[in-house]
Length: 353
Image (tube, rainbow, N blue to C red; front, side, top):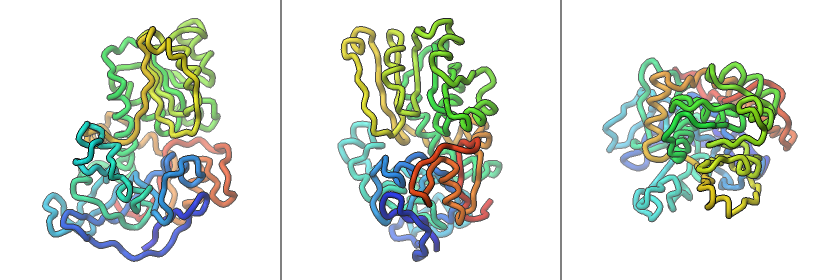
């Protein structure tokens, strides 16, 4: 079978490998339908997020059809359509035992697309406990957004939202920014969005919740929304990793800044303000507290319009074009400006429905 292998920075290619089979009793082998291009994949390829083990198959936002089941599997059978949770946790280490299984100490060798072979491949081997059977009306494409949405719900949970009449913002109109603004909308919070890239702006302007406004400048947004560029806000989700200091200086007492960008960037913060104004600076990653199951239910029930956020679907052999669409030029070994309106980009591994 074919798989997209990572070897070192900018060295990724499709290779022929042996087909998969079940090893443990709870193993399930899935024929992959589609897999989403994630910022983590881009960071691995470009070297800005140097976490992957050489030789690993990339990809972790995925759906497919069960091809094989282990001897102990009881909840799935061959032919079932499934979405796969790639976040492993052992359940026994200190992180798992203290409520942080997304930071399981035994991730090495188990993290899909990083240290365990992921889903930019014709097959993926997962565990029975990591699969959810798709309802008949849910498409493979929209269901593949379950994993990024689950990460979004983890972050929204951490914000501890108790009031809906708050001033809220989302920085960045990429896939995570779009998911966050829709997830906040579902919680009754009307947020505005800030995005400078014209391609992102063009896509987001047509796919935001109706009452949410989009701006290309944060000062302009504050002026238009609240009458003054020095206005204070209660909550900001920064998916860019570029605005920590700016947002921090614009937080109202009790304000919260959630950073979900995996960027190697440093910021200077006024420690006195953190205490004196009861400010919170929060990080979030991966699925937690049943967020994967909740995310699937929101996509299944149409609460989050996942299909609207899918801008492109490429065939597997066109993976270089898929990554180029999000600004990762594998051929030239450089990152480039976005040249077309886009949001979530998927790679189709097989024509499975």
